[in-house]
Length: 504
Ligand code: HEM
Image (tube, rainbow, N blue to C red; front, side, top):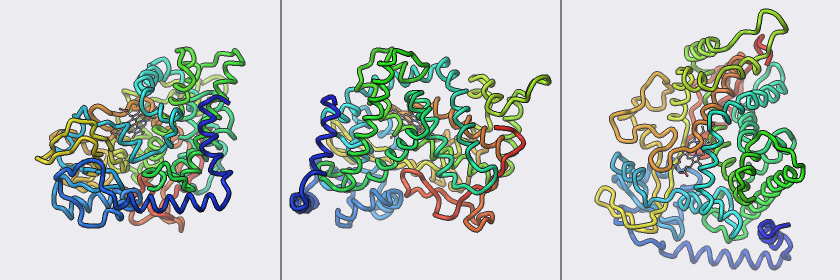
């Protein structure tokens, strides 16, 4: 194993092999250190912004488990558009309002990657291993992501994504009830692996299932302890390290196998190898982007299909739009299946001639994307609404400040794809982010959403039901406190479906 792999090996093995007494002693020491840190002052100086009245200890659980409620109540309790709170030794400043978001999205000193690394910590930072994913490699990752989204590459991806949809959707019973947040997410995970990694991995269903499980562990291991105290050998942290190590091994094995085979395949891994990238850069690209891409696309696809199911007028419109661009089977010869027919639609048509799908995606991202953008102020100090945000402080901006703001979007929880984005305010729509850090995978994500939704809409009749099989009343609402999947209340949302006459 190379030096990089052995870093991960060492980190995980040393904890597992320690005796029970040693583990207990370590945890005891860690508990003391934890208490000391809880009562320590944050490293960044006071920002001058209003502070929350509660003890800082309570911030931790609320920020990681009920972020939407926590941030909203901060603005309410302080009565200010800017307030501050601490997360252990970190000072965090929350912004709202037009001047807050203008400063946030325009500032060059607010660093997205530092913010996510410390406050989100999806992948554990292992010195010399994943730390590189977050700093030196980022501009290379963006460059390669741009290559992957050139016309020729996306055109080649269309039939592959549709074939993945066909294979997975055909494996479902021909009628039944499904949880869209599981089943549609399965499809998205598969197509994300197809788009961002290697055909060898994507063709191996058991490997894809394993990766999905490992990424699930990375998500569930993202606890306050594992994020804020990554040095603490908590069970969640160990779980995350093991998962990272295994993902790392799967990706490096795919690289090695490809190189040893001497066979060139038409996929993203090949594009990265042909560009001469070193193995760490390739591992960084695949591991990092699978995190960035699969959850957000999965959540959006699940909600998109759910909302369409609950709005028959929009369903009729979108199906009419798809039937307009869908070529029919040739009159002579065997009928072609749906995936093959959809695959003949040119990229340009998908991108420029599907306004109904565009509106549906735009509104889904407004209503069901509980994102809080996070940055670190790398200096100098900045001023927002006459309040200093000191160098070294973390800064957060919740998208709900725009997307659920009744002054910008009346009846904001209502799903209404006919509404326009707010053009009067600066940064009045944030579906794909804004400013310096706007989504770099937007083109691929949009295309994937359209392909997956089309296969489902034309391949299945369906309605949204609750756990009793009846139409839900009220219609399920995205839970903005569920920061990863935005899932509705348990038991409130299923799809009762049946295959249409269109063979998949
Ligand atoms: C529906 C799916 C997606 C949504 C809604 C979405 C949304 C976003 C948003 C809101 C941001 C800005 C985050 C912030 O300001 O804090 C962002 C950034 C980013 N997204 Fe996406 N994204 C999606 C899919 C993808 C995919 C598939 C990829 C990769 C293939 C990707 C790659 C990225 C990257 C690399 C950034 C960071 C840009 C930077 O470093 O400046 N996204 N995305």
